[in-house]
Image (tube, rainbow, N blue to C red; front, top):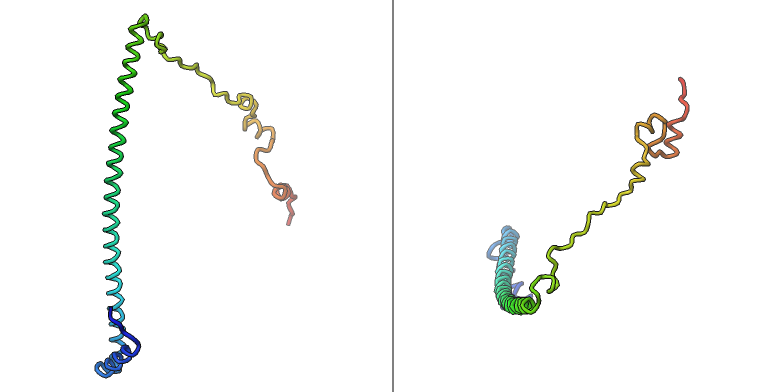
Length: 161
């Protein structure tokens, strides 16, 4: 990296003041500052892109290893399942040959037992005990709750003007 100290910066500033002039120097300094900022942002974006691509490569490698491990597990489960199925079928056929041959001897029922329908048991007393709204309205029963202040305001005698 370029080593720029305070003395070198002062020398560059003095030369710029002489060459560019005091009128244009602030505008040139702003332009140089914005260009340096853009260059730094560009370098930071390039670094971030390189880091992203490296992480993406690592993730692809990890994905490949996980997929290969999953394939191995799937293959082993398939082989064990097929071995178990063969053993199961051989044990059923072996037991069926030695016994009378019906399915109940092995322990299987011909038809599965289905439980009978049971009513969900809603509260029928509550349903039958409710009073209809039309009856409450005719009898003058309050159906809506009202605060004490609202009740007093409702039944307050009207002032005549």
